[in-house]
Image (cartoon, rainbow, N blue to C red; front, side, top):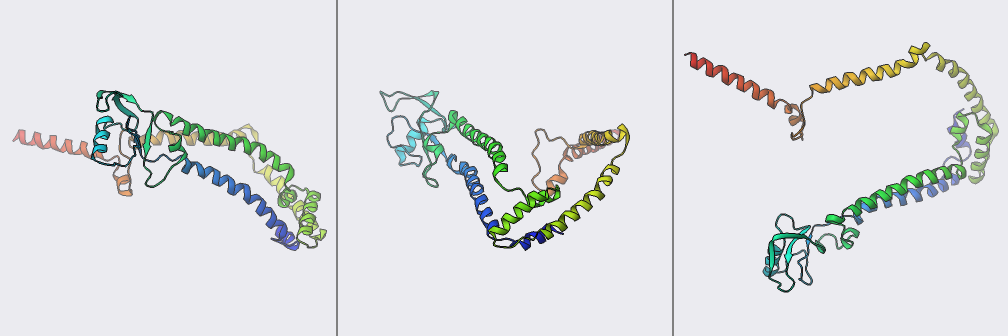
Length: 284
């Protein structure tokens, strides 16, 4: 008898299943939000070095004077992390021949007022902190999965389907009775007895079939390894026929993919045609 029929007889998707779904949804929703949160709070908006000595400096240009100081105090090729050496005794004295690391930044607040990355200045030489935070987050997920995953196996009911498939009918019976009690339904052991008989018959029939599926002798045990190894070698040699991708722009469309790798062959053909034509005119 199908286990779905047994579950339907004890209330189907009733109060017990709804409570289980609600309990399991809480950590999944919280975990998903926590993983996605790093994308937003660690976002780095557009930024540049702050002008040394300029109070209330902003990323947005305030005036022509402000634009002049931005152009003369910051290198044009690296305004995010470098600033010209500044003489604090003379605000207009900038040594454009020497660049130093800046220690203050201004951020574009037009789209996002602030993020954790902008508040804590996780930019330039401090970008390593973003990688460290993400690494610690995933380390926590790894450790938490091992600990709480093992812990949950001892406090959460096992799947009745799994118990029936592994011939653990007494444990399945206890869970079915528990579900029926929560759903205010009546569980009849006769329905589980039919599932037990069906599972026993299926197991008796499949056990000898599983053994007959294997090729006897030591060669039969090694055959899958040989097949996988030979297939890997063939695939490796066939990959030599693929066009070289080192230093080449990868195709973006199907048409580019069809033309990819033909450039060298087409050029070689044109060179051969040019040589033949040149020799022909020489002979004339």
